[in-house]
Length: 391
Ligand SMILES: [Zn+2]
Image (tube, rainbow, N blue to C red):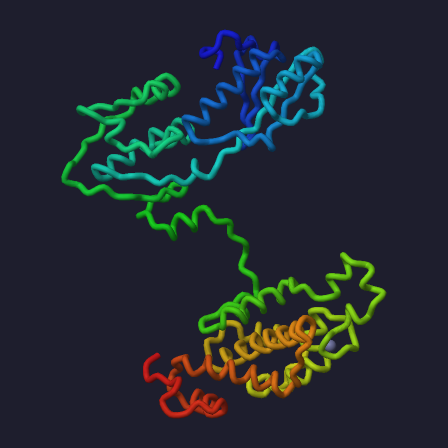
């Protein structure tokens, strides 16, 4: 930086060692004398770095620290840098400017175009040695042919100046008969490139939750699964949530009570299935789900299903389909009453749940075993419907 601009002045405690920057983990500290020329030089260097690498300093996460810098100088510097001013650092008589540069995942994960077989990988190693510089200059991806000609490297001038190590890059043998390949590099692991692999590298992954297979499973009905997922996360907009924002509603029981029974507050716990109406629905369908002994409580139902979450049996599939369909149709009935003033009795709701699950089962191919036959008979699915001699 000082080489690029003679107007740059070192921080006076850094002058002897000619220190401009220090890195701690993913933090970058830049030091300079508290004057406008040096600040401008830093910003120009950061801009140049952005153009070369495609990495952009995060303005929101960058902070400028000042000590004993006259107010008018400070205001000009802050206008130039647009960083937030940090608390005074206590280094009396000195000024310090710190900028944290966000390094994006693109440094860690690289899409590599392999040409001339594995030799191209050595080029990637060279680039690794210069702090993850990418084969891009803020514009389109560079190809080997852009930097290799007549049996030698043809590095962009700016690269040669900034990264002398490139002079020692070993030469490669281009084999014109080898087909170009795309590889994906994640850390030290190099694999054939696929979108799935790239997604796996860049996505954030949380530990798998215990109840995932209760909600999402093969043959689930997507709209039912989505609603059950919201219920599991207590994300439905029930009245008990709304009154937390709207205190006026608390005074009016008509606005907060369950539209299915009018005897309690509308909440997740109440609707599934402690409400007398929902309870009646649950009693009407649980036998068909093989859950005759399971209480009308979402916690008890989830607990029962969790014990069987690894099972791939037809019975378990039916249980999960019935639970999801029950929550969906009850929530639908609750909304119809609240917003459309339409009501249906519990037996009609039960019938809709069972019919929906039955139609779903008609499209599933089960193993043809005696127990499956019994189950499907119970659902009035006969003949060759829903049975498969295969697996
Ligand atoms: Zn109710």
